[in-house]
Amino acid sequence: MEKVQKFITEGKERFVQELFDLLRIPSVSADPAYANDVRRTAEFLAEKMNDAGLDQVEIHETPGHPIVFGEKMVDEKLPTVLVYGHYDVQPPDPLDLWESGPFEPVIKKTAIHPEGAIYARGACDDKGQMYMHLKAFEAMNTAGNIPVNLKFMIEGEEEVGSVNLGDFCKKYKDKLACDVVLLSDTSVIANDVPSITVGLRGLSYIEVEVVGANRDLHSGVYGGAVANPINILSKMIASLQDENNKITIPGFYDDVEELSKEERTAMNQAPFNLEQYKASLEIDDVLGESGYTTLERTSIRPTLDVNGIWGGYIGEGAKTVLPSKANAKISMRLVPNQHPDKITKLFKDYFESIAPLGVRVKVEPHHGGFPAVTPTNTAEYKAAEKAMETTYGKTPIPQRSGGSIPIVSLFEEVFGVKSVLMGFGLNSDDIHSPNEHYGLFNYYKGIETIPYFFKYYAELKK
Image (cartoon, rainbow, N blue to C red; front, side, top):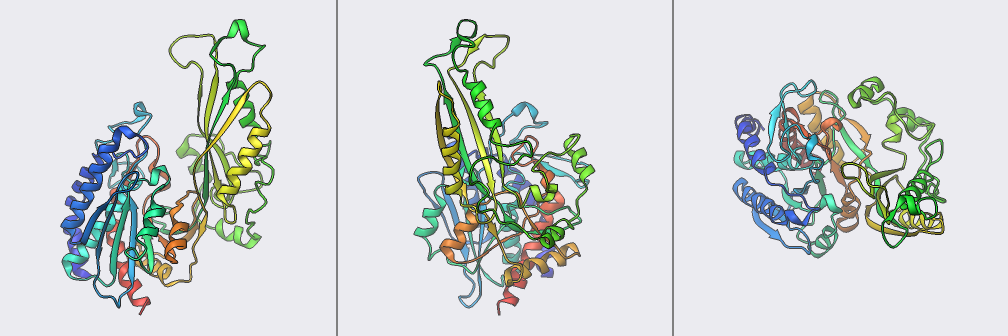
């Protein structure tokens, strides 16, 4: 391990420059205009996998964006780890809020990141965190110290729901066979408070449309006599939550897992400063479901949020128009025992039922995923815990995340194995937002820690 860590220390500057090259490619999977750039990113990764020493490096075509695979099979008697990550990124909009170009990575020092942070779309989610694994492998391979078999599967559609990953996993089940899946698409509580994610919320993502008249109308001539789709949509959305911010859809909470008082008390022991939280967001107060703390609201409780809403005239000046239609994108985060398909149907049935006469409602499901909880008494969790203890000097705290990674339940279904969610980002890294960034401390710490996970996992699996 001394040779491995020496290689990492000496290679830090190169590792950053390579990540910069990766971040400069705008691999936005949601926008067809970036299709060529998404492919360029897959080709870049395949080249770097070959350079690092992986074997059987392949770019697999899918009906959408390609999946990059590579492996290093050391000994069939050793345990096999499948490393998962994604190279696609969220759209950079709104561009005017970026302090520097979203695909022009720069390093800036901040109070949270005094050593500097890399600012670019995908820096933390997930190019930076995914690339840590490739550099960690390169270090082990160069030092001649790889204690496990390794497989890499890096996809290009995570930000659009991993729509083709399930079929790929089932088709290549034997090729991808493993004992555990390792991924870093999560966060730690703080740079001095390491943590391991042991729970994820599920997701139901929906787009709705409310249509009124067959064309836009003059609001003076028709206003007050014909339904305004924006007004109607706003009222319908507002009715989805009550005065206690509880979701009003009938049956929504039927399957929600309720934690015991002891479990809730334990999870609230995690370091959290509400005043700092509010200050960092520049808000006067938090808001959420009554009866729950902020930590509980963002992890063990389901949510319903409007992610985007549009309709009518939004250009310069005034235009007195009564729009023909209005649209919104809505996401619901789900907790254990909630089935995304069931929740989607409950939403659709209810939303259509509350539409008044005079408008037509269309509900279009996009993508979803199951919630997941991983145990803390397994060899893989203990290996991750010990690896973080080694590099951070502290025992990591198990915590549930508010985010969703639907593929975790997919891997368990197809491969019959658990995943280790060993991320190194921070919740304050502005993923999915303008000025996304990733600390140099976090990037290096991930590269340093990952080899120890493989070492301890191999030892615990003997």
